[in-house]
Picture (cartoon, rainbow, N blue to C red):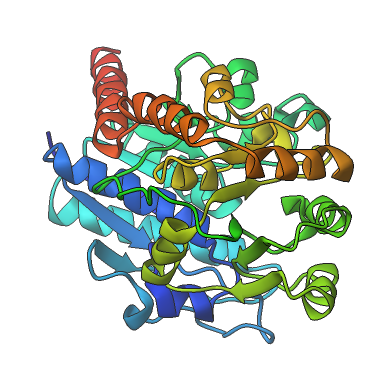
Length: 383
């Protein structure tokens, strides 16, 4: 199989710390898929713009090669970062970079873009006019509620795309497009060993955006209702949540770690007993969002407290512990119940998750996407 072009960047730890607009969870997802391509002998070249706050809050020409993850073949896409012009500037620079690569080498088997941003779609629609046989696959990781305009904005942006990939189960079922694939997330590497004996204190861990749409307000209230002195709550991620910080100042059980390296997060996850994956059900993007941190948690094969969100496929119900509703009391009740799980209960959870993970490795997920790309390209070539 020939080379795939990817629109979007993968930053290293310093880059993720430097640029607030770059999501660590999205970076982990992208790295997993790209490594899956590599295991399937597919080379991927990235055309990498770095999202920064608009000038003057952000830099005028965002991007520095030192912030790109060196594990991947990335070409930096520079642009002028000024209001009212950024979208056009990224689109122009990206299209020019893609056309130069095609001219120097040959047409890739496909171009994939990370999320249907206006800039990416503008560039790829223009590129398709000049290179109609290039296969364009749009990947949607998250999106504002498309029901607001009956999917019109999405259709307008991706009108020239040959295929559509959705992480959200709800998005996959409801998107009014014909050629589509559901692919949520995966895991790679070795499954970590599980500590066989719990420590005297139960460690609850949250890893994600420290913001209200992550459901943290409910978790803060639930912790206040949960009075077990032998529990610890650790929070990892970007952002600054005032209510959480206030709670941490008052309650010694609550520790806000902030954004840390992959190595440090992995160590914390191995040491944790329970994972928390809340989400604001009423948030505008919930239906089109797949909580990728859930797959991160599953790799450690421990109890996960999470709502079954519209973006999650039905089989997730077997591997998560679901609160009765979205109230703080319902979450508090689950805190209490997981603290009472027996050794046999934990073994059963480990086995159920292990079976689930058997078909969720990134190399198998990448293989599914490669097959989808090949069938789409064949259809285009025969058209």
